Amino acid sequence: MEKKWYTYILTSMKNWTLYVWVTSNIEKRIYEHKNGIFDGFTKKYNVHLLVWYQEFPTIDEAIEYEKIIKKRRREKKINLIEWMNKDWKDLAEDW
Image (cartoon, rainbow, N blue to C red; front, side):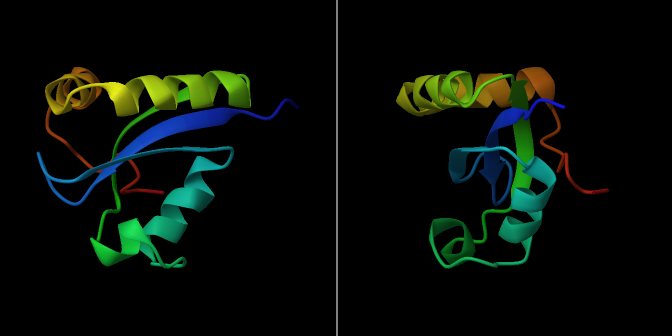
């Protein structure tokens, strides 16, 4: 089975702080964010709601898209989130 990669966006609440990152195990990584396993930005600012993600076949593609998202203005990031998740629901709520 081939490894899958994910680019994802977290927030603390609708239209608030946005955090963009990459992982190969999205369920584990979101669990770590939600439970403050690692010190850092997401723990400090309680950024743990998964509001957008996309799967990629390679790490290079996931990182490339992460870089594209990070360079975008906030408005474009919000549009991307709302295209997939207009109500800003926590997509990992039931994981």
